[in-house]
Amino acid sequence: MSEIKIIAAIDSKRGLAKAGKIPWNLPADRSYFRKHVEDGPVAMGWNTYVSNKYKPYGKGKNIIFTRQREKPDDVAISKDAIRFFSKLKEDIWVAGGGQVYKAALPYATHLYLTRVEGNFQCDVFFPEFEDKFKLAHKEKLKTENNTKYQFEIWERK
Figure 1 (spheres, rainbow, N blue to C red):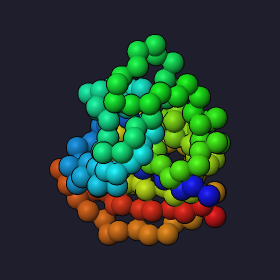
Figure 2: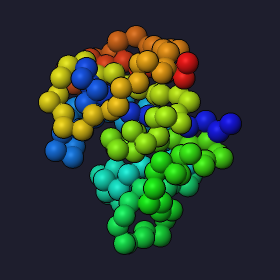
Figure 3: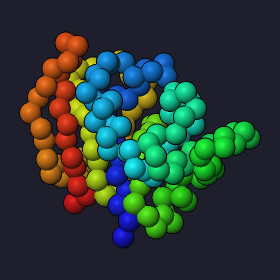
Figure 4: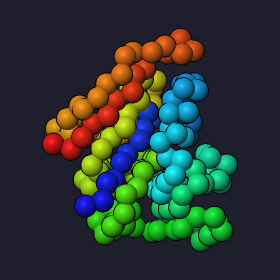
């Protein structure tokens, strides 16, 4: 069975983003993200790809879920995230956004979450997951730029 590993940073209300931007500034979280997805492959939605300045993440294959007609040279395109995850035969990282997380969650084996303390008034949210996953690892609480956060790894029950 392939491992589908979701990686995300979420606030206390499971918020992911506000007006298309991540509302906290945590350089250590960005490093954590890059370290994990470095070798890929990585799947993400079009808006996540655009927010990374139209560049793929890491050195591995990147799959973008979109209905856009343009096809960047350095990524693969899929129009149907649910079908993609249901047929997947390889390990993959899922890097967002909200709709892609929702499509991937029923197939996910692990969640790598950065839990950011506070409500950042987000308008995009991570789906509910606690009933299908168990906390396997939690690092100590850290503070950066006056924001408290911790890294957690959840495994499917």
